[in-house]
Length: 269
Ligand SMILES: [Fe+2]
Ligand SMILES: [Fe+2]
Image (cartoon, rainbow, N blue to C red):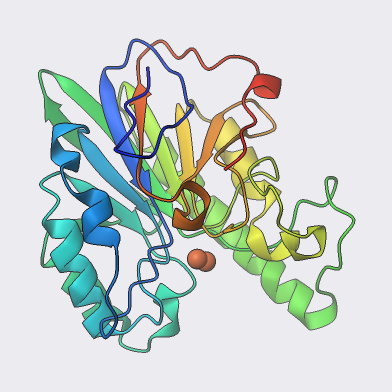
């Protein structure tokens, strides 16, 4: 069952829909420019149980941008769980950036997890990590980094995957959602050029996810991607990047997932 937000019909199917999860990413907020995000989130509290934000919350990782984001996200009236994206990590004042977001109740995940009580005995576990680029080796025929750069990327891939693995190992909830910024699969990369795939995510994240019982993965970062895909093991994946969906997406999640076969899940955006 899907609960589309206004003007943003979506496609994911899952029933019975015990939990309505709203997802968005890549807001790229700038404090000195007007933005449409508050309008996109208006009235969401009546249509969803929680909101997850898949990174690139801000454009430049500035504290003033984080304060604006905190004001917007904190005003939604739902539990908000977020991961950071590469743009959020551009700033140097990372602790102040984080504190600004958390001051309005935004829960930032970075290699850890949280279980949220939604009332009526419903609980959902969310594990989050930014992830990294690194590539999908078997799936791509792309230019990849080499030499020292390759080594640095490989270390980051492994470190982020291990942190996600640890977060999932400790998570005990009837529904489990993973939020990343970088993609764990190529199936949501859509029109992104193959030569860029290695910058957009990595297969190791997907492998970790498939080693656990995960009901849904939400990522961002691939602005030219498509909404729906799946990991190699068949875990449903949603690309929540704002340029892909044009707004927030609300997904019904139930203890008995019914999402069809992977081949049926492709969707233009
Ligand atoms: Fe982005
Ligand atoms: Fe990004």
